[in-house]
Length: 222
Image (tube, rainbow, N blue to C red; front, top):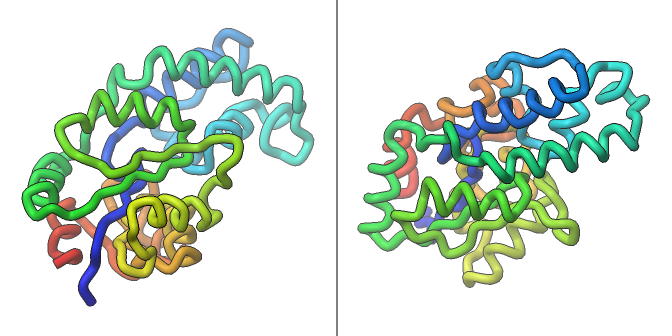
């Protein structure tokens, strides 16, 4: 099959943002006297959006256990978003091989899109800081009126705006959320193994192809 474009997730796929996310969340926890978490432990807390991250980071009696303190969650969410917005690209970096992949896609004129569950203003900050050397037709994040992944509506809408059909694009992501989104939207789900989830999780969530290196994506597209 000939594909017409590529839709990328952002965190864990194009850009390694784990340290900056973890640092911002830990600063919020520290300010309230709550236990901190290791950077690596945040791999399992991100991907569902900022609110879920906060719920999963708070101590069990306050957070993601079905008995959330809603006022505390909302307050910590606001603090996290403000802190992270002020420090979104302190340690963020492109994954090895991503610049070369994007160079080649740009050379071939392949349409490229970004869809993230990160809030949209921060998506734009990260894209501007880390990906300004390449052209993305659209880079969307989470806004109040747009359903978050794994709801497929974001994929459908972003593709519609650039005259692409979801069934004609590769969806490149690193999480079960991404693979489920791709399946529900009718895209080809491609899971990357350099991100925040492992091979088994990606396959179980619907990944049809796994990429071990960014250069694999070019081969899949071609």
